[in-house]
Image (cartoon, rainbow, N blue to C red; front, side):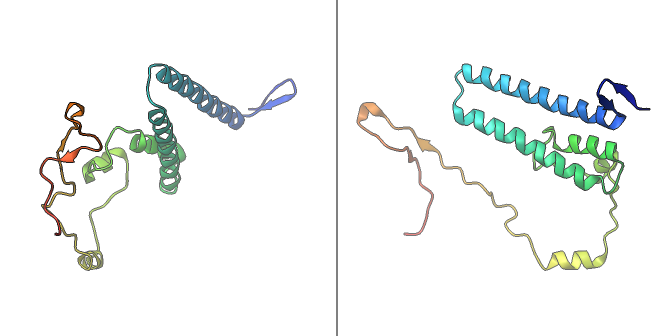
Length: 161
């Protein structure tokens, strides 16, 4: 069904595109207003820039995930699942189990050919049980004692001599 409203021809597809564009513009305007309000609250410029970059990154990742998923499922389902996977509800290291993936509608299987295991055996993962981050407590500088510069480690970690 095609409606003509004056010089414009409105089709269902162009109406959907117009709705999507208006949502993007509205969210962009709201985002900019929010950023302005936050700036008025005394946040540093760097924080605002990082928030803006993070928003753009999530949008880009969501678009890429939807592009990958649309090859395996209908477009609407791919878009919905891409939003679920990239909207920030989980941290990057949250494990999605097989049951959870199936619950999300991902077509996963646990049937793995033996050759995949053989290939993975060629690349062992080391360092298990060893922390990947070393905590070094810092002693704050004391201006009244004439100390300046960066804080010094309380107990520096042992290193090469």
